[in-house]
Amino acid sequence: MLPETLSFFEKVYWVARKIPYGRVTSYGAIARYLGAPRSARMVGYAMNGASGKDVPAHRVVNRRGLLTGKHHFEGTNLMQQLLESEGHKVVDNQLQDFDEIFWDPLTELPDNSGA
Image (cartoon, rainbow, N blue to C red; front, side, top):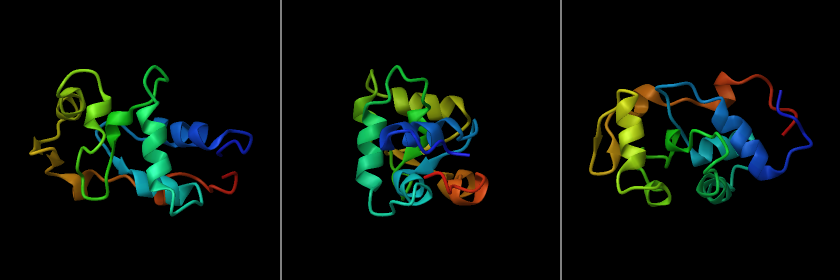
């Protein structure tokens, strides 16, 4: 269960750490899980600051599977390379298998009443 004492950013990181290898989610899906459906942009801000926090930020993309946060990774194509290392195809900064690999925390995680 999501610890209620965490800050919003720490809650975002908690959810992101639950994304299984080979799966991805969206900023909006995390925001909905946290009970803040209009806060996808805040989730994005949290992901921008996730460096060094042991958070698989490369697994969080926009609602269409676009790698909109890629410029926050070191190196030109690190986000894409990390996704491709997990078996995904990326063309023009978009995951080609997004619908098949989408992970929805609302259905995959236990009750989020701590959010």
